[in-house]
Length: 185
Image (tube, rainbow, N blue to C red; front, side):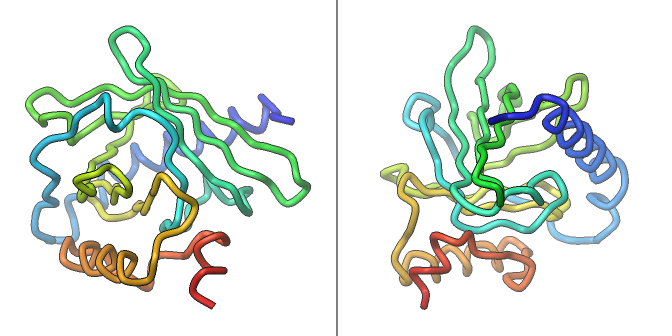
């Protein structure tokens, strides 16, 4: 069961963390600018994506398994529905919106779960068949590997780790989701 009060608390924390990153850490690391894919077909991107790996963060701390994001068109923006299973077995859900950054060919989004605060959601790598995606933000404080399925084979995951490292992320900062962890054992 979703608890709206808990959701608001985590959404507020997410907004504050993203805002803080946007104002400070993102520009202070002297890293090369973060590149994104050339273009994203929004219609193909819509639907459900399962989280396979992430940089642990406070706004997802309650999630223990089955973390997913669903994207749907809704008028002039994209509706974002994030879900996960908590330790007690209940489902946590947060609903937000995403707006495409003009001139980015749909590869950069601004996402909000707690308006008026928006955070960066940049598509760093995308499978040509839209089977997996690597998402991040310019400060490299947050990052995710998502896929249409709950697992990917070891060769594909190794490729995605290399993509992240080439983009300036540290592999050690990432944690595998439980479903993907089971595949690597």
